[in-house]
Structure formats: C-alpha cells, structure tokens
Amino acid sequence: DIQMTQSPSSLSASVGDRVTITCRASQSISSYLNWYQQRPGKAPKLLIYAASSLQSGVPSRFSGSGSGTDFTLTISSLQPEDFASYYCQQSYSTPPTFGQGTTLEIK
Amino acid sequence: QVQLQESGPGLVKPSETLSLTCTVSGGSINSYYWSWIRQPPGKGLEWIGYIYYSGSTNYNPSLKSRVIISEDTSKNQFALNLSSVTAADTAVYYCARHNSNGTPRFDPWGQGTLVTVSS
Image 1 (cartoon, rainbow over the protein chains, first blue to last red):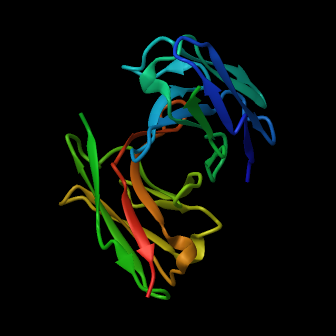
Image 2: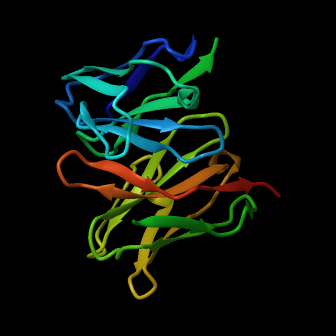
C-alpha cells in the first residue's frame, strides 16, 4: 500500500492567516491526489482533486499543488469555518489510502 | 444532487456480522463506483471497498477475508457486510460515491453512522 504522511499533525492559526499543509507519498503518485475537509461530527468533504483542481462550490482561497511525491494544500486567508481537519488521499493505486490528518485549530 | 444515507444497527456483538445499507437519492447507482469507508473514533480514514453497478467489487486486502459489498439496483441501495467483528471494528462507517472519471475521488459522502462492537 502507498503510505501518505501529512505534516504538521496539528496547526494553530488565526483568522486571516495563510496556512500550508503538506502531504508526502511513499512513492510517486503523479497527480492522483485529493484533499478533504472534515468538520467535527461531519463527513469529509472533497476540496481539491487531481492535486490542483478545485471542486465545484469550494471557495477560491483553497488551492493545491504538487506532483510525484510531494503535495501542498494552501488556504490563503483563513476564515472561521476553515478550522477543521484536513486529509490527503491518493488514488494512484488500490487500495486508496489517506494521510493521518491535520487538525487546524484557532490560535 | 446525489445524496447518500447510511442505515443499520448501531451496536453489534463481537464475532457477529456488521450489516449496513447505503441509500442513494437524486441519482441512479447504475453508474459510478460506490464505496464504503470507515473512521475509528479520533482516528483517520480507511477505505473498505467498492462495488460497480455491474456488480464487480474490489476490497481492501486488509479486510478482504471478512467483507462483502452488494447492491440492490431496484432499491438504489448498496450494502456492507463485515463478518467476525471485534472491538477494532468500532468506527463511523461512511458510504461515498467513488467518481472514477479522471482522478478517482470520493464525492459526495453520506453523513456516516457509528457502529460500536461490544457485548
């Protein structure tokens, strides 16, 4: 299985901050990388697919980049509703696997 | 738009079989792949497996010996059966559409249902 490692595991930030979360794959996955947001008690929601494509309806302050083994999710200006957990997921090979998650907390 | 809803018992005894159903509304299951994913309390996400409307399936090797995913196209539903459960199978179970066009991705998801394994 392809291992996905996110960093940091948790992050404290303030409204208006720019934040970046990284995700590293244990082998090259081209651009087969998705990002999800999960608010407490809710199901994950797709934010970014194919490493950098913004899912319909997702605010443009979210962006993704990377290819191969290293990827980033950037939130350009944090809003109160963005404080949540974020997961990367590879879809290059079966089984699809997720990173361990990054929890974004209010400073 | 497509919506998914999980249903089934919230409590299952050890060694028994966990059975859940996902009802799809706003669209037909006669296209796309449909997946089950779980999340133990306070932990990360694990893909369990998917079914294609043709009936073909693919399971996570870590669970393959205990998992069966089936479908009922007449009811627009698909189901998960996980046998010989233990406390380690306690989790929130989600169903999701597995969009395989381009980069495969999970969207949308059901709200999830907590299943506790305990005697």
